[in-house]
Length: 526
Image (tube, rainbow, N blue to C red; front, side):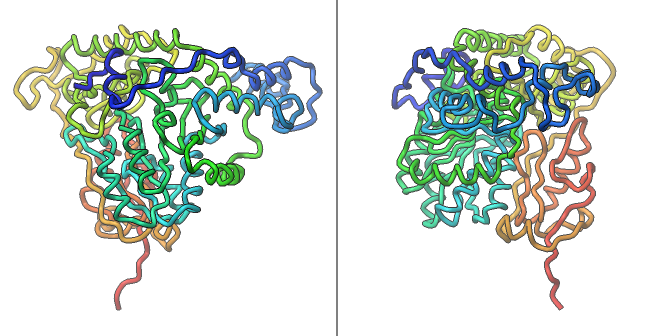
């Protein structure tokens, strides 16, 4: 059983080979050179006649100062400054080197447009290696953006699915091998691990499969930036053989929202990939990258690399959340059932995925009520579940969360005829479940459909037509239909029901209710 506890994560993952313990906390990892340089610059009395236009003048720009305080204005410095980011050996270069060392990378890039930027970079880089990207179907929508930008054909590998909870997990090495064998023009293999719900795939086996076919393995490890920084966390993807890893450091690593990292491994593809990545990075990174975001990445790296005790406290807090939910008996922990899926080898202990349907309430409603009635924010919500995230170093109030969770209303008489959780109150009917729809067949490449002439039609009239857009129930943002795929009646119903639920949202839709969809304007037969 893959039960998410601190003493079970390591043995469950890739047990055929021992995990290499994290490096001792080197002295240099205790420094944050870029953050220190920006802070020192902000302490000086500058007459600022450059950008940004607020000139760190909190008196003149009092609205910004009232919102943020004066310190962010002083630290909001432009790029290309001596002593900060200009020249060889600059504090920024030192910070990048420290990040590469901390994650075990050959080279690391700081990103200021999130892991989405990293996925788009990876897609464009892959285009130089072949014509087809062998890609997990349940990738983030930014990976699909990379397909649009690159023009690569996609060969999708279907993930395992939990049909009851509507959750997509990962892919097995066997399924990846089958897809690669069918596409001799493959450029790279592209997978997602961990999943939004904390499911960890066997990266070592996936890397061996890709390398055996002569192609690199790209891993969207957006939700695993903290992996490898504590012996009771799973190993990170670089350590297990991945060639290029996208890391959304702001998610659980502690940096500011919209900041991320891109890590290049040490494998056989590094020499070929590094100059390509640098060129595409230059193409996609802002020439006015935020010093605040960059400094937060430097500090997050230091916090992870030297913060074993803080991470241990976070692991304790997550354990307390899970144990309290299990003990109360109304709700269940999704990861307790991960052993049913062949692709899952471990679970992220800092994720607490909860089956809310087991307690008689949809995930969307639970998330909405926790936010509006209890001022508690959780991360992902689907029709059947929510995910509470504990950042590496954070220690949330477990008692407050569990008390609010069990105060959520439940139907008086659910489908099994038994009262759920003994909840008092008026009669409530349990809403119908939203089943995760299967994607429609592929008729065009993603890029062809995205750039083709298109038009908006009523959603019902879009059934059987080719989608020009990416649409994804959000969060988690996994696309349900892609440009080039046929829109089915099942998809239309799913989108409209999702949009109608409390807190539901469909990213990419032309209107909030998904009453219209954009289709490829294919010529009709005479």
